[in-house]
Length: 340
Image (cartoon, rainbow, N blue to C red; front, side):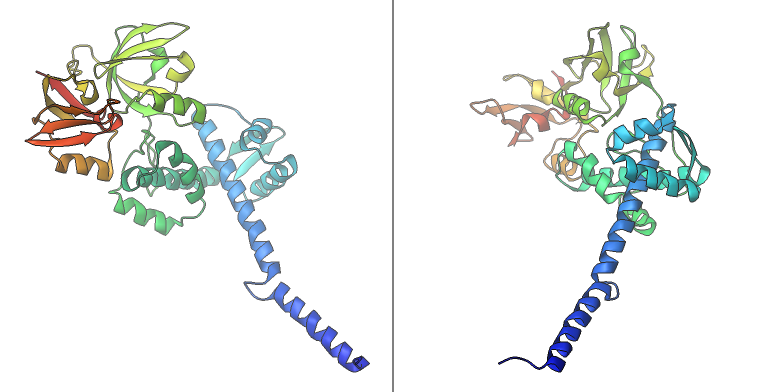
């Protein structure tokens, strides 16, 4: 049975009206969703640009458009469009291939950096995510948290001054401390110091440093430094790094007359049938993990010895205060001891 022409027209009208409603429906319509998505993407790209420019500015590097394209991996057309918009909004100055932050752009960039570093601190203190995940997860959150939410997060964390890598966290007012120290590869033989910062970019170099189990806060002594390698002792162990890897570690140089805890070694290095006294827990051990070790009795002055060793030597059980407690090697490496 065929429909009459008026009825066909009515059905067609209703279908078209429904499609128009779905497309232009306030807030949730396809048009607004697409528009807001584009707006959000532009905001994210702008913030990525500002943070990268701020990083290069602090390193004293020229900020070149071509380098920005290579670093951020956005298409030429997208980057050109966003840069032009940022210039019109007074965030950057554009002069051919060279870029500069305006005071407004720098202020905005510092806010992004504050969110990023606070979130990395949160991940280190409150979660069990691996160190290699902190940076990427913080890069997601730096675009999502409002300034009010950021201030609440800072308060919950106790308004920290440094993030887990040793980078200064900007204050609410935008004040930023400077990292004081020398790059590890620039230190002469016999220099002593304390590791205060480990750069987490590029990721490939950061992973090499993590694989060596090098900790912030460790006291070190340089024993060799040449074009091929940098060799240093820290907490009873010898470390060998390529100069380009060592350049990502910043050290606060100490006077050689200072006590740099030469006799402090890691619990992971304690042999069987020897006893030791705990000197403390490395700053590398944070948050709940640190509190758990303290609750278990790994406190300064406590006597400790190896109790049981697993077939693969990892984990080991340590006897402390009459209790046998198993620790993985990476956990034991964060506990400093003095052999007796």
